[in-house]
Length: 339
Image (cartoon, rainbow, N blue to C red; front, side):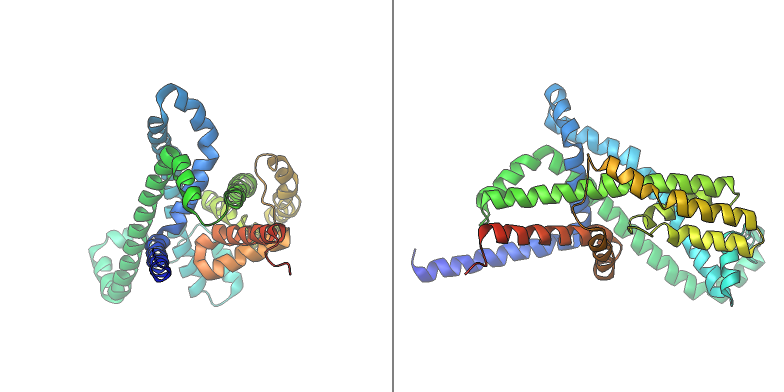
């Protein structure tokens, strides 16, 4: 093949590869999490493969994952969204911060009553006053639900594919990649390390903090303790002070509502127990999964990922920063920038 022909072929191949990557780009989040999931359960899958075969194990583990993890998580997220919408409505309707914080720990739902909704006259009045707004909210919710279903489907399909054919697919990619195999293996190890660090290290710590916080909320009689525990879990992914974003407003709401003893107990447990679990539990979990990034860089990557990519940035931000750090180490070791 002539030089011009090879140049044209490179252009065509590059364009097709970019087009394929762009096609899968909107689905990067569930595919990313699926890859981490497959890597985390692969040791167990390999033990079971000897008895029943790889594809049956992949199908079984995918179904088990759906039933054991994703269904409860979906229900939890749904309840969290519904409650968050109600809380935002309360806060938006409040003229004072103190009233808003009291709404956080109150049982009441404002002037709304279920009996009013069942009254046809009141329901008709609500439709007349808020029909357009309700339709807009309904369309937004329907769109978000449809997007969630699609991402869940993609996640399950990708997890099954990674478990059933992941090793063969990786070997195919390494064979055809212009990047040397040794460098590809280092990048893969970094990808796996980040997944274990986020899921086991950060996720395990966040779960422990959420359980302690939720138990504290329930014992102190704070309404919607389960939902507040879920909020604490997600906030704990922000290193160092994430859980304080939940328990501090709750403690303030208790104080403004006159429950000073409960507020003091929650504040004390928040500072000395919930906030310090991270320092105690993370070294224990580090033997199974540790994210090799300084704490300050973890915080910056989480916030930067959130700003650029939205909620999924909590995962993608640390991954990209960790991969960038490894790429710089590879460049140094390979002498790419040496004169």
